[in-house]
Image (cartoon, rainbow, N blue to C red; front, side, top):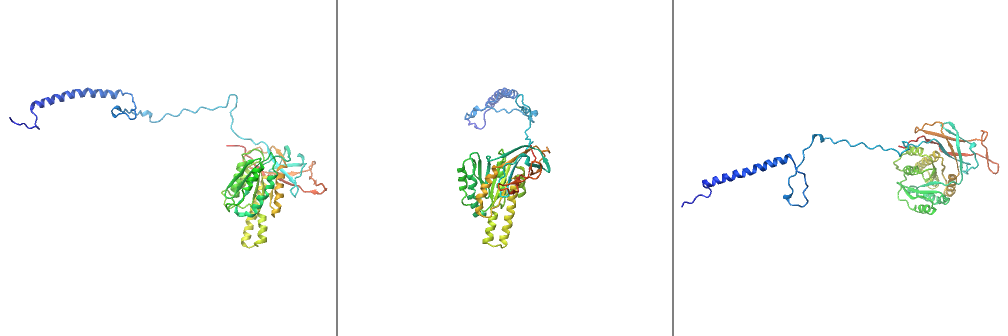
Length: 397
C-alpha cells in the first residue's frame, strides 16, 4: 500500500469541495439582495440598552443630510406685548414740570429768620424772574440725612474731636427722622443704615475709635453717597464732616461737581477741620516750607467744602477750635428743619440737560428793600442760602 501525501488531496475530494462552494455561493446571493433592500427601506432606530450584549446592538442607520436643511429656519416672531385692555401704550419718562427750591434765611450769626411770606421772595432762573406757584415754610420738619465722616490717620486728632461732638447732632434727632452714618478712609463704609433709633446712631459713632489707613478719598465717598441718596424721594441732606483733603480718589474734582449738579433735592452741610489744624500748626510747628505747603492744601480743601455747600443750598462751617463744634452741630440740625420752599414752573420748558442758574432775593410787600429787625429794634442783614442751580433733564433711559 502506498502512503499518500496528506498535503495533496485526491481528485474526488476536489469535486466535493467545488460542490460545497457552489452551494455556499447560492445561499450568499439572496442574503446580499436582502441587505440591499434593507438600504432602501431602513428599519426604525432603537438605541441599545445600556449594559446589553454586543450582539443585540444591531446596525446603526444614519440618515442622509438634506441640502435644504443646511440653513436652520428663522425663529418664530416674538409675540407683541400690549398693555391691559383699555390702557394706552406709553414710554417711560419723568416730566419735571415744576421746580422746588428750598431756601434758608438766617442772620449773619446763622439764626433762622421765621415769619416771611410768599410776597417777600423773588426767584430768577438764568436771569429771568419766575412766577412762584406754591410757597411753604418747613418748621421742625422731619429730616432724612446722612452723616458722612472722614476717619483716617491723616487728620486723626481733630477728626476724633469732630466725631465726638457730632453726638450733639445725633442727639437732636426726633422720632420721625431718618439718619444713616457712613465713614470713609480708602473707601466708604456704612456703619448704620437709615434708622430712626438714636442708639443705633450712637453705636455707629462709637465704632470710630482707631483709624486703619492714612488715606482719605473724599470725592469717591461723596460720589457714592450722592448716588445712594438720589434713589430716595424727597429732600435729603448730607452732613460732611471732614478735613476736605483727598488723597487718591478715582473721581476727580470736576466729576464730583458734575455729580452734585445732577443730583437734585440734596443739601450738603460741611464741617471742615482744616482751620483747627492750621491754627495748631502755627502755634506748635512754626511756618516752615513743609507747613506752608500743608496750609495751602488745607486752604484748597476748605474752598472745596465751601463750594459743595454753596452749590446745594447748604452751609459751610469752619470752626477755629474744638469748643465751637457742639454749637455747629446744633445749628446744622436747626437749619435743616427750618426752611422755606419755593415752587415755580420754569418759563424755559426745554428739558435739554443744561444747567440753569438760580438766584433768590428778598423784597418788601411793596417791592422795595425788605427791612428785618430783631427784638431790640436793631436792623439785621439777612443771609439767603439756596441752591445755585439745577440740571434740566427729565428722561430716564
